[in-house]
Length: 65
Image: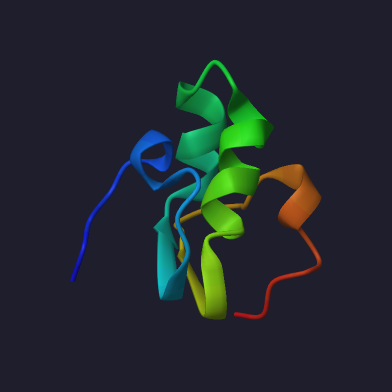
């Protein structure tokens, strides 16, 4: 298991990626949605998203519980 920040993962690809707290990424980063995009596009095969509460607006309606 490799744990990276969004900045550390930029430019890398992984078979499976789990993104924790996408709303937190958007809220806490000066690059907001841009950093979330980077996090969500590192996976080449499987993507998991762990979140409590509502996801950021652009993700609503696209995620399955």
